[in-house]
Image (cartoon, rainbow, N blue to C red; front, side):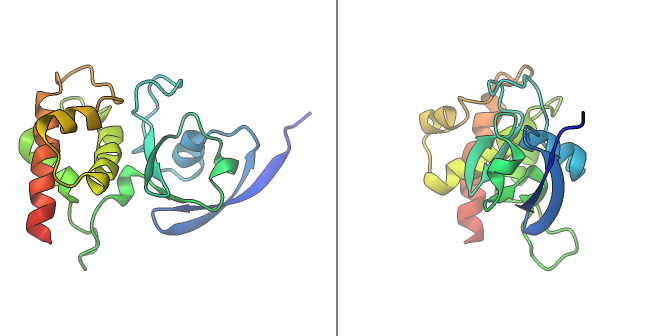
Length: 166
């Protein structure tokens, strides 16, 4: 007996996609396997590590805890959608991406997409965080490589870059 498929329309990075998915298809799986957006990483599959974080209506959400059918009607932004559209074919790096590159905020890179999306939302809420606020902003994402020092530096630098671009 095959599982019933549901037609869903997902708006991802500004593009509407029509998919047929099982009711229990996780948003992370729909993004990665159905849409080929492999920037969203799946680590723990329990919502603990934050590697799968995407923005759903501009808010960070663990995509491994959300069904794709639950995302209908929402605007989803993955790490692939964080570049700024500046007229160039691929856009330029967003402030958080640029800061991670400048401050060496990544090592293996597995957790990075979740940090980038989380920090992007965090800086919308608090565009000029203190160091303690930057640490709090990333507290829900796990990194096994960096020790967080350069990630916190990246948050603070991203805030500066965003101010410079205004």
